[in-house]
Image (cartoon, rainbow, N blue to C red; front, side, top):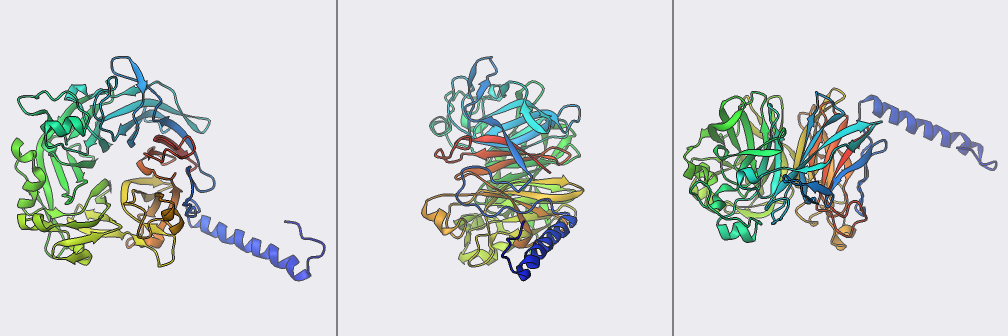
Length: 490
């Protein structure tokens, strides 16, 4: 920076010194291992806002041409959700992406209800590209799906995808969930075959089976443990029960035992309640679990683990009651006492991140959501998709928001007055044992109206895949429709 000739001697040395101090401070921060300088809250953007040094590439958008199982082509579904990266020959730069669609409408080519798309990707000269046709997963083998939400890659290479809705009649299945064929399956009404985890074979691009033993409810997400037998499951319900399934044989989730988590009275531990595995019980497993004393949360979203620590995003709900469920036998988790607004009624505006110690069964609040301070634009609320990422030898919990509206400080006043909703993605350093809101680092401000989800890294932590789900149609392209992006720069 050149000094003007009429600048006073004081300014001549003061300004460069301030700049040197600033650069020195930045270098000190970099030496501390910060991955990025957090982005400022940008609540008037129609695109992806990332820290300096990071870039994104759009890989797959709603409306792109997809090949159906019978060879016909059609515009791709929207509402992109779960993203799974499946390495080819162990590569961090060449693999398949599996993308769920949280949809529920009839489609004459791609099949009714929900769905998923998969395709081959490769990192070429530092940038990700799609190098194959986009293929639609064949769910006709299991009678179709609805609202494919979260899920996971299993240790043996299949994908588990979650059905987030379970209709209560064939009429509801057809009119609200887009399934036109309501014929019975194995002597049972068609609507009883939705609301499960579904296993998909990536070699053939076909669904293998619905995992009835994992219960019928609003499945949100799942996490498979390395033993190939244990799967932790979340429920996007009011109330939400935390489930665990243990398979009889490693690599085969078709048979096993389902459990529900119950917290101890003093919240120092807990236990897993074995649940009856009769088909009639499994179809109403949340009510069965509550009658046996299961713990209750409010709208559990995604789930992931780091060693013996299980992390759960609890998105919350502005107003709700546990009156019926408490009378049945359900037990609210201990922290809900602080959220009570009346007898068995609660207000949980911002949600939180939970941590379950799998050695002690102790469930605790790792990070409470909320507004940082009265006049702050910083508000962490309604966490949804999460993943544990290992980057440069350090573990991070990467958290996407899905705000329950734009009130209560979730966006700044100007955005609220415009009727807009914005969500952000944060990084939390997992080496911090008692984190607060100040430990969150804002990595991304998302396009207006969208939910950020998917949250999937390559194993080396150098590439990050994110779904931009249901953005505002008035946004500038490409973020006026759902898309999957690849972010590099780590």
